[in-house]
Length: 408
Ligand code: GLA
Image 1 (cartoon, protein in one colour):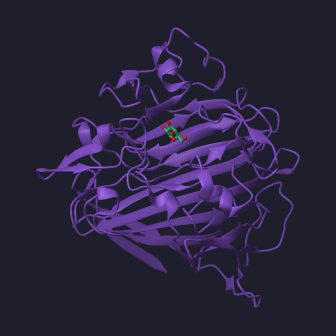
Image 2: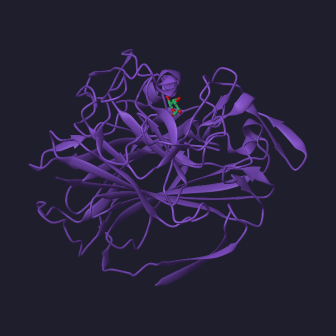
C-alpha cells in the first residue's frame, strides 16, 4: 500500500510532498484480547529471536474520572517500550546492553498517582509549545496572546496544563512493517491555555524490530496559532536509578547553539560552539565541562539546558538528519537521534534534586539523566530570525524524531 500525504510546510509556506510508502508485510492478528502481533518480523542482528512484535494494554488508573491505559510495545528482538495515554508518557524503555542484558533507560514513576502529583516532564509529549516563551507573551496577526507564567516570568512547556497533563485517545496502528505502532490523538480546543485555534494533534510512537523508537507528530489548526511539539524522555543509558550520566559520551552535529539569558530565554544570537563547553561535535563525556565556572552559560543553566542548532545543508532544510549520538561506555548502549527538527534541547537533568524516586525505588539526583528534546528553538514566536513556529489553517505541522538503540 502506498500512502501519499500532501502537506504544506509550516515553516516556509512551500508546498511539500511527503510520500510515505507503507509496504504491507504479513500481519497476523493474535486471538488474545488486546494484542496485535506482526509476523515475519526480523530480529536485529545478534539478538535472541523472540516472539513476534506485539502491543498489549492494561488499565493504569484514573485522572479526573478518565481512565488511563498503559500500552506495552514489544519488538521481535525483545526491546520493550511502555507508553501511557496520560500525557502520552513513555514510562519505560527496556533495551539490551552489549551482553544482551535489558535495562530500563528512561526515568519515570511506578504509578499514575506519582505522575499526576508532580512530574518533571518525564517521558511526556510537550505542547502546544515546547520550552520557553518569554514573559508568556506573543503576537500573532496583530493580537497579543498572554500565556500562564509557570516558570518565573516565562511560560514553559505549554503552560499550566500542557499536552503532558491530558488523557489522549489511543489506537493501535494496523499493518506496520517491521514493528508495532500506537497512535495517540487529542483535540486541543481554541483558547486552551490561551493559545488561538482548535488544534487536532496526533503523535504516533513506532517501535521497530531494529530497536528504534520513532515519534511522528502531526497537527492542524482552524486559526493561525503556534506549535512546537517534542517528547521529554529523560535517559540514562546505564539504566534509570543507576547514578550520574557524567561519563556517558555525547556527540551532537551542531556547530552553533542559542545562548540564553539568566531566565533561559535565548538572546537571539546563534553562537559558534567551537572553543566552548558546548562543543560536542566530537564525542565528549557529558560531565567533562559541566563545572566550567568561567562559562556564564553553564551557570545560567545550572549545567546544560540549551538549544543546539543542528547542522543542515540550508537553514530551511527539514530532511531527517542525524542530530547526535550518546554512548554509555560501561554497558555499551548507544542511542542515535535522528530528526526533521532544526534544534535539540540538551538538558543535563539539572533540576533533579533527590526528592523523587523512580520505579526501582532509587532516588534521582542532579545529573542522573539527560534529555535531548528535538524542537524548534525556544521563544521562536518572539525571535524573528529563528525558524517560524506559526501554523496556519491551510498548513499541516509534521515532525519526526527517531531514537535508535544499538550497542558498541
Ligand atoms: C526543559 C527545560 C528545562 C527544564 C526541563 C524540565 O529541558 O529547558 O529548564 O524545565 O525541561 O524540568
